[in-house]
Length: 196
Image (cartoon, rainbow, N blue to C red; front, side, top):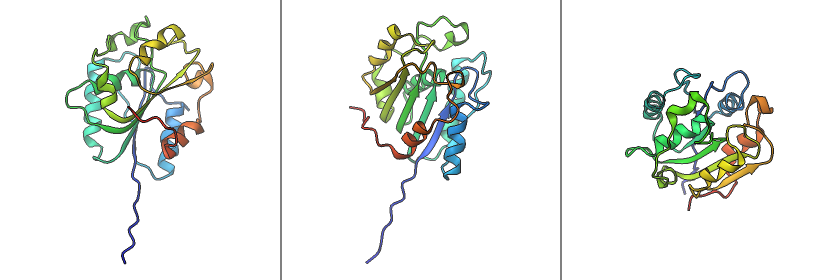
């Protein structure tokens, strides 16, 4: 009798936001932690971090995804990276992935000049759920880029949402260098957050 051992392969794509995610940011820490565990991780550094253009970043994301093998894939996006993923998902030929975790997307009503090129968001909200088998929003109750009164916008996507009390924008300014919870979520996938 032959013994068959199934090896679970999961690749990771980390999408930064405005200003990048270097200098000890949890996304940089997550990338290095996953690599130390033998995982394949892509962490593209998009052009002009401080003055991003949606079409430029979207083209760079499309090229990155073309390089990633057609194997199970988890996307971990932060801030403007979440908005980039929403635009990616709205493309007709977007690739369907296994999981996407979107942390602290900025409000579509935020007035910060540097992010205005990424708005408005695509009208077809169902495309976001269709782009992944599992999707999860992770929000904070006192995120300066997503006031509580604007959180409802992301709830209209009808996807699971995990709201953390008073953690700011979940970045270095709010104490998020190492983030073991996120690493565990990426590796173990124990939360029941399957798209309906």
